[in-house]
Image (cartoon, rainbow, N blue to C red; front, side):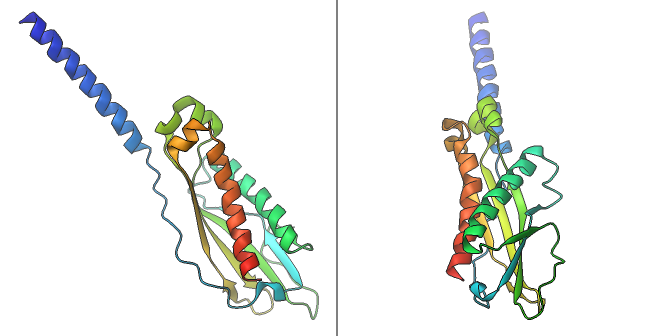
Amino acid sequence: MKRKTTILLTLGVLGVFVAGYMLSFMACATHIREAKPRTPAKVKLGTYQQVYMVNTTIDPKFAKSGENQRATKKINEDLIACMKKIYPGLQVVDSPNVSVEPGAQGMVIMPNVIQIKFISAAGRVMVGAAAGNSGVLMQVIYKDLATGNVVADPEFFARANAMGGAYSFGVTDNMMLLRIAEDICQYTKENY
């Protein structure tokens, strides 16, 4: 009788451990929706002589996390670097309230992180895949400064797999940030 009790107790503890381990994966699921289908810009983006880009903003709900803020800063750096290759005279500003020289066509680009969950390398080392996927959803508004019309407002989505992040100690999470910036620049080139 004592032996059966010990076996049942051991199986019960093991079952609770396995269930808890599986729940930890489910609790850390990334719930970021994918981007809406992109439409071409209403106006060729290469027609503008003066182009401004507002520093990338983040939805306040996701800005509470220091990791998300650092990820947004990295996206902004990568985005500025690739946008300057498309628009060599690009001016980076903190506010979309800018004006253009008389007679010049101007556009302001406003990138915004709508949703983000970023797992840092330290997080990957500590808990690995149990931290879940990293993911980011952005919307970029391209606005004509003369008319105030939005000429394009595409969304972009990128994800880094939890297991890939664990095996690479966070490299895939960081590459996700570069990938979304490159996707935005690619859209800009395609609509230039």
